[in-house]
Length: 149
Image 1 (spheres, rainbow, N blue to C red):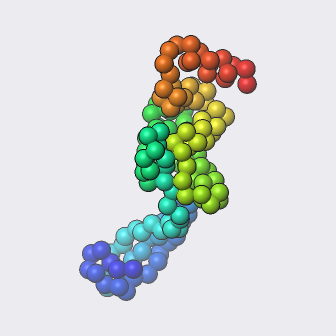
Image 2: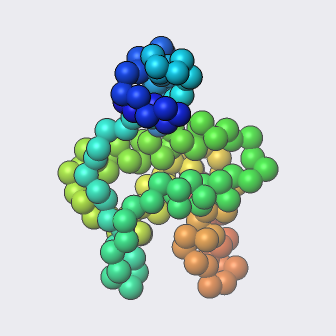
Image 3: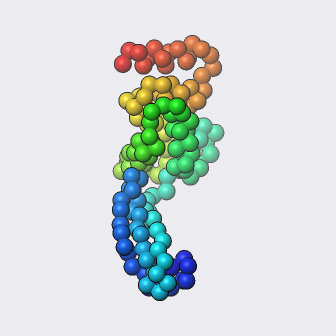
C-alpha cells in the first residue's frame, strides 16, 4: 500500500477491524515517514442494476437506498448502524441470488419487508413515497394492513 503522505510503498498494518457493512478497516503506518492512515477494503461484487419503471437501467447505489431509509426514519429511535445492517442484508440477498438486475419495485418491497418488522411509522413513511399514493384511501389501506399484523 502506498503512503498518501510520502508515496513510499513500505507500509505496515497496525490494526484491522471489520465494519458493520462487511468492509475491512485497516490502520496502517508508513515505515518511511512514520505517519498513520486508514484504508478500507471491500469485496468486489457483481454490479447490480436497478430497472426503473420507465425501463431505464441504472447502477445500484447504496447511498440512494440509505437516503430513502434515513428519510423514512427521521425522528425515530433507529441508529445508523441498524440502517447499514438493513442495507447489508438486502445487498447480501441480491448477491446470493446471482442476478445482476432487480426492478425498483422488487427493491422497494425488500425494504418494506425489513421496515415492517423494525418500525411501523418508518414503514408507512417509506410506503407513502415508494407506492406513490393517489388518495387518502390508498394510504389508509396500508395503515389498516399494519394494524392487522
